[in-house]
Amino acid sequence: MSAVARSDINEIRKAWKEANLAPLWENARAHRPPPLPEAAYLWSWDKIRPLISAAIDVASPEVVERRVLQLVPPVAEHQDEQQTSRTLSANIQILLPGEKARPHRHTMNALRFVLEGSGATTIVDGKACRMEEGDLILTPSWTWHEHIHEGAEPIVWLDALDVPFQRYMGTGAFEPGPAADMPETIADAAFAVANVVPDTNYATKDYSPVFRYPYATMDCFLVQLDADAVTLPFRTTANSVCCVVEGSGESQVGGDTIRWNKRDIFTLPQGNRIVHKSSGGTARLFQVSDRDMYARLGLLKEEYGNISA
Image (cartoon, rainbow, N blue to C red):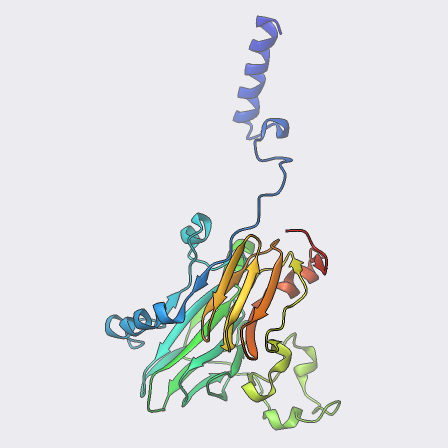
C-alpha cells in the first residue's frame, strides 16, 4: 500500500470515529468462535452454613431490605455483576422467629425454596403461603410479597430470580411497600381438581394463581435419581442452579466432577455435557432453569444420549 493510500485510510478511520462508526472487519470480537462453557461451581452446605449464621449478627430486616447472601461463583464477569449465572441470581435468605421482611414488589420473577426450618409465611398479593422445608413459593413479576416468621427456629431458603436477564434487557424495576392496589386472589383449593377452574380474570395473566407448591406435590420440579442411577448425557443452551433436596451423588459437568450432598447448591452453566449419578440411595435435585426463556426466544438447543465432551 502506498503512503498516500495509508494516509487516506487513517483519515477515513478518523472520520468514522468522529461520526461514531467502526469497521466490523476490524472488530476483534466479531465472527469469533463461541467461548468454552463456564465451569460448574458448588457451594458446600457444610462450608457456607456457619457463614449464613454470621449474617444474623450483622444485618436485620428492620434495617436492610432483605437479609440475603448472594451466591456468586469465581467468574470475573459474574463477580462484577454479583450474579450466579448469565441470567439467574441465586441467594440465601434468613429470617429469625418474630422477624418480618417488609413488602415490596419488582419486575424480576422470583421463587423461594425452603432449605431449613418452618413456621414462616410468604404473603403474595395478599395470599398467605406457608413455608415448610422443601416447599416452593412463587412470586411472579410485579406481585407484592413479604415474609413473616412465627416459628420457633431460624428459617433459611434459596431465592432464585431472573435479575441479570432483566438488568440486561433494561426492564428491572422495584417498588417498596406498603402494598397497594392488591389484585383478586383465590384460595388454592379452587384449583385442586384438574380441568375445573373458577371463572376469574386469571385467564389473562401469564402466571399461575397458585403460589405455594408443597414438597409432597412437587415432583414435576424435581430430578429424582434412583439408587446408583446414572442419567443420560445431556447438553443445553439453558443455565441452571441445582439444590440437593435429598441424598448424595455426583455430577459430571464438562470436564469437572461435582460431588454433592444434601442442601449443597451448584451451577450447571450452558453448553456443558452433564451427567448426574446418585450415590447409594435415592437422590433428589431441585433445579431452577432459564430454559423457558431460551425456548420462547427460539434459542433453546438440547442434546441427549451419545454426546462428546
